[in-house]
Length: 358
Image 1 (cartoon, rainbow, N blue to C red):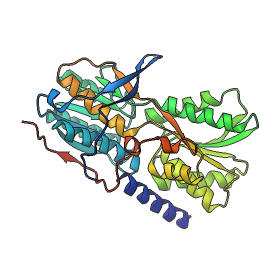
Image 2: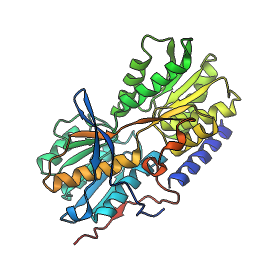
Image 3: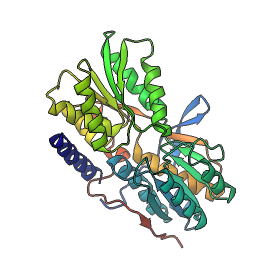
Image 4: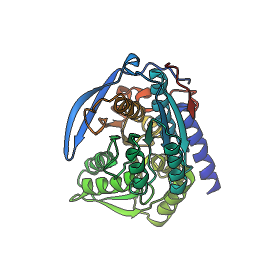
C-alpha cells in the first residue's frame, strides 16, 4: 500500500506542476456557455467585461473547500487572472477539505464582517452554507455559487457546470463502450453531502439506467489522493469482476495508478467525470479512457465576471451559466486549449491580490 500511495502522490505533484506561471496569460474575450433556467438550457456566447467597463477597485472574497489538487489550482488561476485583468482585488480563503464546513462558515462570516464587496463561494455543503449566503445577500453583498452548488435561493448567481451533466456524459460513454454487454463498475464520486458529488451520483445512475452497466461498489470519501487510493485498492481486492473504475477527477487519477500497480491494464478501464492534468495525461497515454471537461479556468473567469457585473449594477444574462462541457478522449484530446482547463506551467497559487484600478 505504501508504494502505491507514494506513486500516487508523485503523480499528484506532477499534476500540480503542470497546472501550476505568472498571471497575465491572454485569456479569451468570450467563450461558449450554457444559460440554464430550470430544465431549459440555451447555448450562448458569454463576453467578459472590458477593463474600462469596471469602474471601481472592487474587493472580492473567494472561498474554496481546499487547494489540495490541481482542479482547485486551476480554479484559483481562472479567478486570479481575471481579477488581475480587471484591476480589482481579491482575498482567497481555503478550508482545508470537505470535512471542514465549520472552517468555511467561519471564513465566510469573517468576509461578511469585513464588508467585502462580493463573494465567490466554492461551497463545501450545498445546504450548510445557506444561512450565511442569505446573511451576505441581506447585507447587500452578492454571492456567486462557484463550481460546487448552493441551494439557498437568495444566492446571486451560479457560475458552474452541473456535475449531474458531467457524470451523465461519463455514464453514457461507459454504456456506449459496453456495446450491450454486462459491465461492472466501481464508482467513486467524492464526499457524501457535497452538492456536486450527490449530483454526480444521480447523473451517472440516470445515464446507465436500463443498460447492462451496473455499479457493484460505490465508495464516498474526501477528494484527497490517499483516501481515493485506499478505497479503490480495497474495491479491486474485494470485487474481482470490475470492468471499469469511474469517479471524480482525483479518483480517476488514483484509479489509473491502482490499475497500473495491480497489472490490470486491459482488464479494468478508467474514466473520470471531470478533468485535471493527471487525468488528461492518462487519457493521452492510454491509461484512462475519457473524461468530460468542465473548463475549470473559464468557470473562474465567469464567476469574476458575474460578481463584477452585479457590483456594476448590471443584470446577468442568466442567474445560472457555465461553460458547455465536452468529452475528452484519445480522439478529441488535441482539440482543446489547455489554459481553458488548467493553470499554465509554473503557476503559483495567489491568495491576495491588490487592486490596480484607482
